[in-house]
Image (tube, rainbow, N blue to C red; front, side):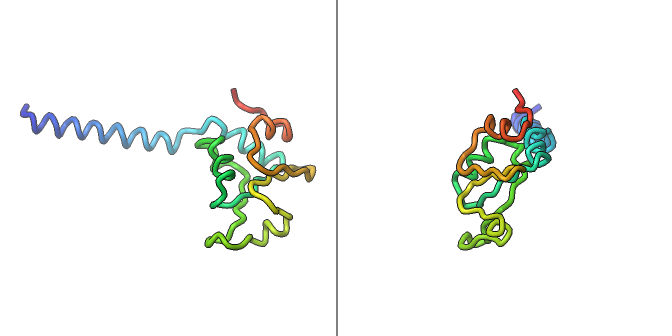
Length: 124
């Protein structure tokens, strides 16, 4: 086999590995999927805005499982106004978590606190 064919073969194998890992990362469950789903089932709601750095930090705590959060986007696409759903919920700060009993917590909330407030099991 010539050096060119070996190089081409190596590039092809690397591309297949990259695609495989990318697909696996999209379809594999995240560590906190069940926890994030439980939060919603227990009546917790996470209100935030796409431009809010603390909201992004809150989502990062959940890693791949952030898509499972009971999240409500409060900002209009231009980032200048608040959507009516959040105004009606009385959201003034981001992020804000509202729990089933009506309790509110604002700011970056540790996962342990979310588990305590909802009774959802935090994975080890």
